[in-house]
Length: 75
Image 1 (cartoon, rainbow, N blue to C red):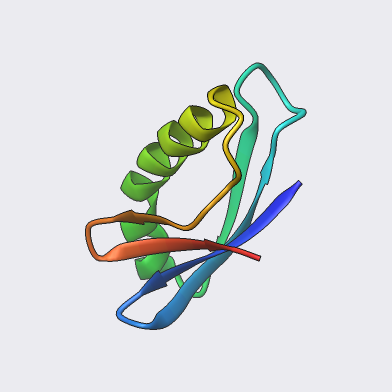
Image 2: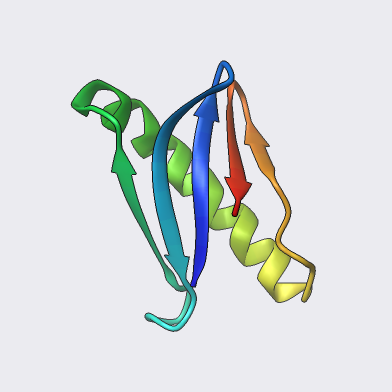
């Protein structure tokens, strides 16, 4: 399991986990700070999933991901 934080404008807006052992592509769980941030993060999750799968397929180390104004920092 990989834990991460989603950051926007230097503020942590959500925390979550990526569990690679669930299903063929793993599963992302996110807990947003509030409903509004949760709705904004939903579109970002698809991009996160794609980038994590790309790193996984290349056996790369998991590194921070940035998409637009959002960034994901692995703990």
